[in-house]
Length: 243
Image (cartoon, rainbow, N blue to C red; front, side, top):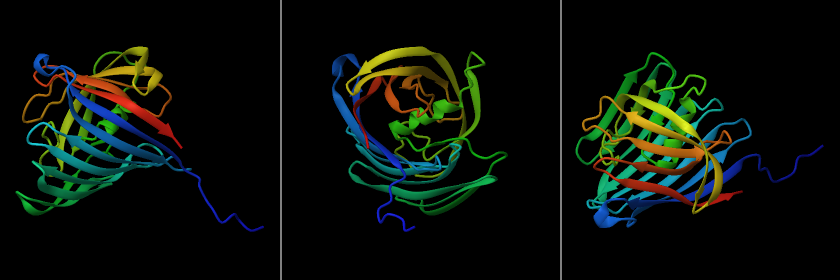
């Protein structure tokens, strides 16, 4: 029996995240935006493609393509960034069970080849797309309350805005579960899980607490987030389309 000419076994989710400020002198002022597209394949593997723009001077523009296998294990990622509306760097990352590697070219370092050995398969990768921040939350074991440490997370940049590199950088991360909530954002009303990133040892500058809400349906879709301290930034899902 012949198969149909057309094949579509995957499903798509696409959306928009608005970046705003919560500083008193800039309250609710738009400071950036992000457009993301997540494709989940029949075997459970998934890829997020995101275009991110930060307008605060010097502006940052980032394009990423990040893939994970059916068990949510990172496999590869592409990152390209510009800063101040000028090229900063471009790079490709690959994650093997025993090492991570990247090939990049940056404005400051030129051509860079990196290989970093890891003791266990990498559990998550921070490429600085806000949509992908929520994917870290799957690592929290909600049967064990209190702050939990993620021993190794690799970054494409240790800069809070992801404005350097891109190159491999390793840190550990702490997160805690705040609770289940039903929240409303501009994209709609959702059953949500509320978490907080409480620290990230190893960063050049300490990152303030970061509250983040994701969907409670096992997809860990980003809904909203806010960074306290000197940053006072807010992120909110304003559009969500499921294909």
